Image (tube, rainbow, N blue to C red; front, top):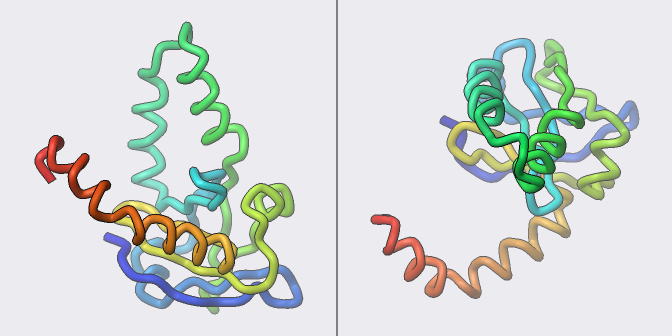
Length: 143
């Protein structure tokens, strides 16, 4: 399980270091793709396979299902994790997530989210301000 929030920077060679705890779980390879809310999702291979299985079951006839599958799959790429725990993020994914220099790496259960630090801060403030309403809605789901 991935949990926690960590601040990192993209280095001069466009590499991003991952937290040591996350490296142990990921191993030597991972899948990176477009995420929701203008961040990137990073999955270990086994969790990526689970997601692919779910996406394959979505109805091809529904535009939302096709669009979501395209978002997740067309932008996906396998990345190698080097000996220092760094990954190279493709330029098209950096553009999608507006990644500059300062990055937040957040653990969210079965995935890692990679955020531009300013976008993360804005998202977090907005979510924290609405936490009461969110909790009320989640109550209906048994959370």
